[in-house]
Amino acid sequence: MRRGAGIAGNPVLIGAATTLVVLVAVFLAYNANKGLPFVPTYELKAQVPSAANLVVGNDVRIGGSRVGFVGGIKAQRRKDGSTIAVLTLTLERSVSPLPRDSTLIIRPRSALGLKYVEITRGRESQGFDDGATIPISQATPKPVELDEALSMFDEKTREAIAANTSGFGDAFAGRGEAINTAIGAFRPLLRDIVPVARNLASPQTNLRRFFSALGRTAAIVAPASEQQAQLFVNLDTTFTALRQVARPFIQDTISGGPPALDAAIRDFPVQRPFLANTQGLFHDLRPGAAALRASAGTIADALAAGIRVLPRTPKLNQRLASLLEELERFSEDVNVPRGLRATTQALRELDPTLAYVTPAQTQCNYVTLWFRNISSLLSSGDRNGTWQRFIIIPTPQGPNNEGGPSNGPANGPDEANHLHTNPYPHTAAPGQPKECEVGNEPFARGRTVLSSPPGTQSAHTEKTTR
Image (cartoon, rainbow, N blue to C red; front, side):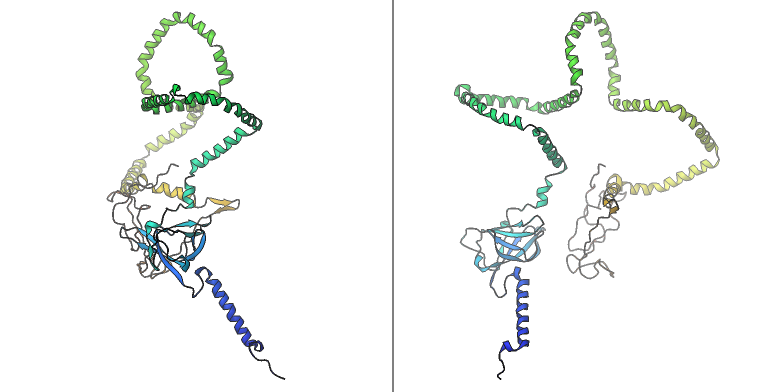
């Protein structure tokens, strides 16, 4: 009997061929975002202000269609000291040549941070050669990040939007029938407004002169606009307070106004001598009233507190008797002067230290900032406890990096592998420059810094209100 020949009769060759096909398929799938191998491409460089959140392999699109991918990203330092990003764009040959007036922008692909490069094809006949660089002047318009768009909704804006939404909801709630009636009334309104508009448009009405005169009037009252605005603000405050007593108190007052005015007409001539004497009294009291104006609020608060405290003072005085006796014995003790002298000496010795440490808070606000920020370290949690917020920041690679023991400070060779530390920063203390270095130190890229940075930094840090 004749034996079968060829690959079909050999299991080893069949397995080898299958393995080869699988390896080729895996290779092609793994490099799908980078294009098929042995396929010619059109490569360009592109300068952009920032490549934040853009990674190698992201799409390059023209008109929404994918025409290539980002093959590389690197930083470039310019002559003026600024830093930009240079992208390597691997494009299909069908795009070549890209017109020289084409522009590009880095756009978000989703709200999760995925980006892609969008190219707007120009109209020039001349195009970029393979390997050419698209200048940064054509990376327009400036992209707007999602966090920048959301940052305009600050806390006050969010509160105002919530108040407006709640107010509009309350205003329209249960008023559907009234809204329908108002819409039905718009038709006769529009019908009646036609002759009114015709009269306003007539040259005899001279509406143009009315607006010019209105503009001149506004220009005359413009210097007093702030006072008028404050007047309306104060009126709003006053009427808001009066709304609480409008009915029945103010209503009863207005109703009783005419009889009161009649009584005043009869009685004021008789009261005129008394009013004249009262005028003289208040005239004499004017200097004292002016002096009390600045402390009136404090005096009012003190009197309010005194009303509550005075009934308790007898019991307090009884309890203070033993304390005062003890203080008397303490003052007569011969060892007290020695203790006071020792305390005085200790305070004198502490004075230089306090003078050195005090500016760290009074000028740089470091103590308050530390307590404010440390409070948010354990601010999240549930009924079982709180959680500590932290994030792992990997150290740069290189000799003597901060990820393990080293025999010296990190000093390159990579730009990121440089130690930046300042164990004794300036805090505006006596003998130091008036600067608050902690929190204001500039980052010296590509240099090892082991002391205070050159130059004078800001003399203040972030202010805290609570």
